[in-house]
Length: 299
Image: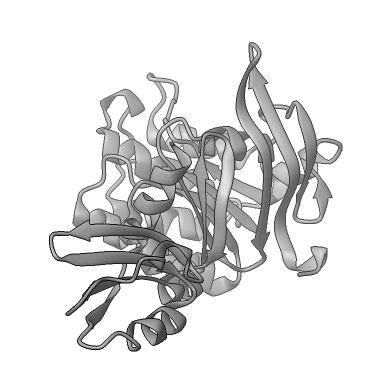
């Protein structure tokens, strides 16, 4: 993929806090116009990565490019083109919603007032209520409104569904996909809501302990990661762990559960050679795949 096709590119990013590594050689490529999900357990480094993209944190080493611009030298220009929703929403407690919106509007060279007003109406955000009186879910929605206000080319969302009930979460997803992604904008989202990410993301990256352990298109990932449950009429195959694509073999009583990555046809072809062997190929959800890979990364 050419650099011009990328909204975000990092090369060997590291970050340490008081000598303790938070990021360890992060290589990330986010195609323009995509919905990219960054997934990982708490403390994996997702928020640190997003903050480095905005130059809110400086990397210890490595190179960052955002929208074709140098992540450090051209950070001011980047911020003009990027919308950001932080994981934790913090506002002046005495300020009302309308004042917060007006303040943010003054910080950007362009601002989509019509979209902001419409989103406030959809989310039922009261203009004259102080932010200190808003629920956690309403604060999350206000953060999203402020992130989309400047009509960003790149939208960075850090846990954007915090405090939202299922109906409101689905409403937000629909707006993000139909409007923001539908207009060709790039969305990089960090979230624990794996089912939601499976529904909207084009690509995902799994992050564990400051490293990207897998990055792939969602359709390719779901199509290539399978489990095969097999029972043998006679003695089982002794070398299944060494078959192409086999990542693990777990015994389940008289049966075996084989986790396969990208070589399911080769595995089933080998199983067919065993007389009386019965097998079924099981699809996996994004959450199943994430748990498998994240579990390996935490060993």
